[in-house]
Image 1 (cartoon, rainbow over the protein chains, first blue to last red):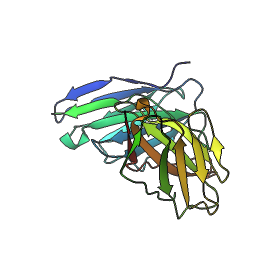
Image 2 (cartoon, helix red, strand yellow; image 1 turned 30 degrees about the vertical axis):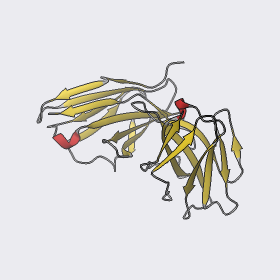
Image 3 (cartoon, rainbow over the protein chains, first blue to last red; image 1 turned 180 degrees about the horizontal axis):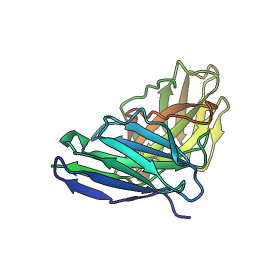
Image 4 (cartoon, rainbow over the protein chains, first blue to last red; image 1 turned 90 degrees about the horizontal axis):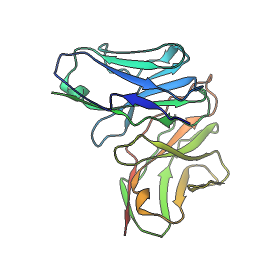
Length: 114
Length: 113
């Protein structure tokens, strides 16, 4: 079956612009996670959704970052007034539920802020 | 969640077993050990997980010490396609249904022809 998909695969934007990154989880997966990975770094947790609600937003680095999920499926991560330090690969993962289920990752969106 | 420590990098000859260690000395009784890997330019991929018994699947084996303070991921016959960064993480079994997963920088495994 189809895995987690993300779009766009690459995004180049100017500093100060807003960007939206999209994640389509595996059908039927209720839990969805956003991470980011800067060059040479590990994965940094951003936010977690169970259904449409986000019980843990603790990883969002600033109030410029927000995310939503609709219909228990697609999620959008929005970064407002992008800064150069926002440049990273943004990864989305989904799992069958939020318990002890392995996470399946998408290919990521490479964001470059110039 | 318990912190894990892994070597930054390792080399392994193609066809030989790759043994990747992980220390998780502060692991608690309800935390599982998970391994993921990330091949260059791809998202992480689940490999295997275990609680206290050794586990084996089609990808790898997981050996967990009796005191559960360390584990070893074994790729029995490494191929060039196994070159990747390998992440060892620990996750609470039941925490109100939610688990925040923290990935460190992992071990970069280079399989050498």
